[in-house]
Image 1: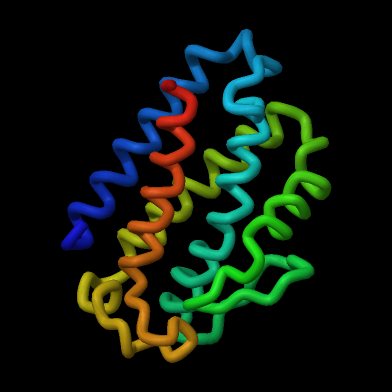
Image 2: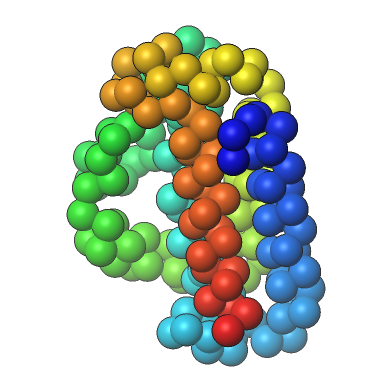
Length: 158
């Protein structure tokens, strides 16, 4: 992804790919695929995307990010212990009912896209504008969210 428009187009296409997977698996919500159910995969993606949403909200409000209440410290350039975080996400959120998990993921993904659309492209590309990003441009969060979703989608397709 090089531009805001390209990033948003890819995110919207990725969202549609996921909606298609969800529609095709509506009756198979408990099916095991790559050791995770569809619900667990959506919860995992939603949980991680909360940090990306926090970045975009902070940029729009010109303030420091308000991160989700996780027991692990993360920053704009350090995701911390990913395995420990994933274990915590599973223990904390996997008991959610399917409909809640799906609605949280869907609302979070659409909100993420809407926030990105509101930011000027120059702000998404400027790695120095937001000190709390430690040199990483916000566009990297769009790219990362896309890549994370694509990685898990490909696991579902194999």
